[in-house]
Length: 396
Ligand code: NDP
Image (tube, rainbow, N blue to C red):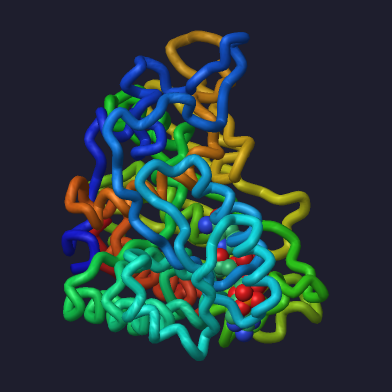
């Protein structure tokens, strides 16, 4: 019961709404709420029209992303609230509990006793990748629904075990692909689906940053056991997942890739520094991209080339700054934003809460995380063999 067993593709209306957090905004005819002075608002000023029982969430792993984005994101949620923190650092958990009004605190040792806690409906795994499968499965066994950070796991075998655990526990399992709730990407998705580019011809995706082995959140990413895999596991996955979001119903029929690690760079003894890849789709489209721990500054770029128009997003998948450059119809290029990226965090948890309530399907289910792992594994298999083409048959 990971999602509904298949990957769900949003309808045009659903892509416009972009998740529950934006529903009131979309209902008011605008994607972005505005202040009286016309400034875009991050919070939604409309009060819920019906009282909603918010589902309780436990946040597992209080690191950079959890503290910096996930936890603050709940302040814009309507269907979700934080009811527990799970951490190996009791003082940090207490401090954050006091700041956010969360009094249920668990350690990794006491984690399994969440089964006795009726205030927890959903568990959000924000741990290093090598721990995703273990803690997701433990949470599912404790009877909780699980949203796991990307990438879903270290391997497709682990992802399959997570999906099986969700099915046997009859609980929902989702992967936190927040881009599926980010309003600018939702707008591009809508343009692509409604034929705004004509026929899609080519997609390119480049994502990377410069890894610093002295920075703790980067250090584990450079270790195979905790990082799960190489740069694609962490950053290139945005390119794979976002590109495929634009190509529903297609299939990945062949994959090739080549490593591009700088010679002698001491950071890359366990994982590669960079990898370039190409996915051949059944439709004839190629998706080409790069994933790197050696780019500086941070790169997050998606490009969609159609028969009639093209779109570039740069940055494409960030927390705050995503921007759309549309070119076509003989007009000068238009650069614009279609919504405030920040709402993606609330929209994502609310979307999952609503799926648990049975109101919608899980938009980014475990099956999507498994699909992406299979594609990434095929890329690394190709790179290991010097770039040989690996035949695949992976439905989008
Ligand atoms: P951090 O290293 O900053 O945080 C990870 C936290 O996990 C730690 O602070 C710690 O929390 C806990 N932890 C438990 N065991 C270990 C261990 N052995 N080594 C290190 N940490 C451990 O990483 P990030 O916050 O950057 O990443 C966490 C997850 O979020 C990853 O899965 C990553 O892929 C994902 N992520 C997603 C992003 C997105 O945009 N969707 C962006 C950034 C990250 P504690 O002290 O509380 O136990």
